[in-house]
Length: 190
Image 1 (cartoon, rainbow, N blue to C red):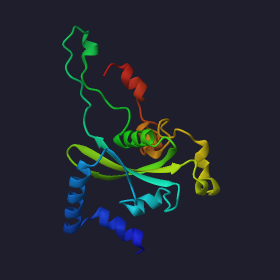
Image 2: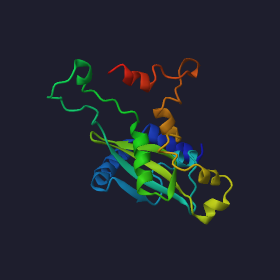
Image 3: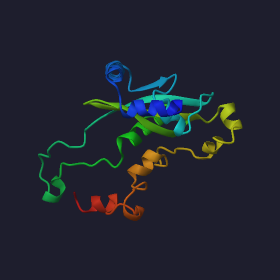
Image 4: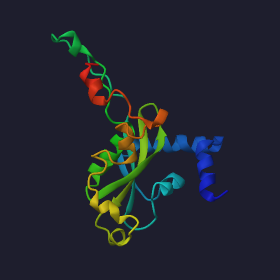
């Protein structure tokens, strides 16, 4: 097995020492800001598989997203029964939200992709791979400079997390579109 496969296995089936290390990390991460730039990826195997390279122009950001917040407070004013629904489904998954927030903090960078790192009862943590559009090494690299022509990928839902949130990466029978669409679901009044 190669090095990346060992890393992948350690994430899949952690030992007791690794679980203790992850708990200590989460305690430390809770005290940090919601968006923080880090020197190197926590999950090197996952970052490399998504296109990360250890060269100038690639930026790794750890983004914290608060869980929950999907239920609105009860409405006390008169409403017709159809409009009294308190359940509010998010149209984006947490990973897509994390990518958008990282992109807002780094406006000169473009989101390449992101991956899950940790979670606790209150938060999710994702690491977002950003590419600096103005860096000379990115401009010269023909494998990654395609991203220069794709501005606002995360806001338009063009990253893999955004496509999953839009129902385009559905893997079911025949890989069909999810029915009903989000629009139709909202039209029903749920």
